[in-house]
Image (cartoon, rainbow, N blue to C red; front, side, top):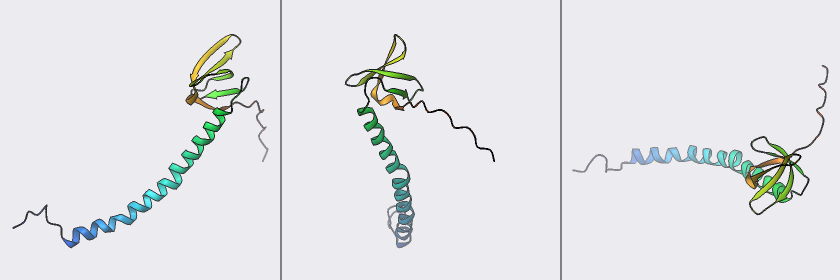
Length: 108
């Protein structure tokens, strides 16, 4: 007599195979809608950080605005106000700050 947990019958094997298509669909959706856009955004951010030059106005992930003063191997020195410097990790750069004025709201 075999143990009920150790026996694999056709019904349980069929139900396991029946779960495979939904799991594959979820994996494909996750790949195309979560992983690929995140990877593209990260590569764009890395290119931005690599192209930073002295005098560029940047914003950190913490919301600090400053002007790049110096780039080091793993860090960037920001001038956040005249004579006030802050050292941050390169990974903390969110993007460049643009001084574009806000567009006025259109009347309906």
